[in-house]
Image (tube, rainbow, N blue to C red; front, side, top):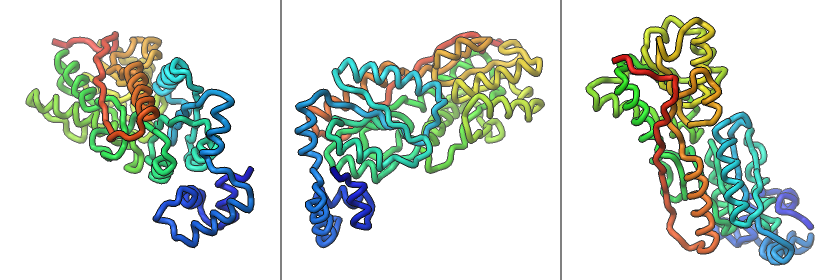
Length: 344
């Protein structure tokens, strides 16, 4: 059976145009729609509705988790996936993982999956918002929910479940201030503006700044360090290159746990004791944080709550597609371990 990708090649148009044409979208010229419809008839293309009806007789539907622009080595998302897949299976759906780390297969893979007729809905975790994928899913009437990386100022037209990262940053600053710290270094990400995770780090920094301001202090730009790839290696490298600079602070807020672990290890290798000489706290609450010495004090993202609410929202859309969009931001919590201490 011919696919929309093959129809696109025959028609000399994009797969997106083919999909919209087959859904009789008014934005596609009538002549183009007629030409694509004729090619579809000639080559035996079966509409998705027909395939879905045939497939539904054979077995379960599936929920696909689409991850775009995110490397495989994200420890926080590994934990998230385990929980999401568990929730999907408990709801008696098949769980599919679609990874598009280098942004090469995003739209094509989604269209191919939809055409199989087994997909009941998508959970989308992406650093790059793809309007073509979104428009395709809307046109195809496939329910979908976005999880993470959008921030509070995101598009109103999207269903979003996320952590309240502004509150998380505020909690981090409040904890360090309560311990008596005043000279605080903040390690954030300089992710490019086309990446959605930039909103995540902006929110964390904004919340941190507000707590500092409320305490009658300021957080000047010189106290911020922007790191393109927010991982262990880059944080370790930053400390190694700027050791004299970072030693002038009495605390560090690294906006991921992996960066905090990089900081702690770099300090250890340079003879600096954490937390005796400097406190370090992270963000995410990954289990690997307890393997660090000292274990990382952190802002815990509510993985279970995020996964449960995301799936609940998607199932609601599957059973009742005609709903207004909803945005939900779940509160993170402070998780005190051993990498911070009071200096009062």
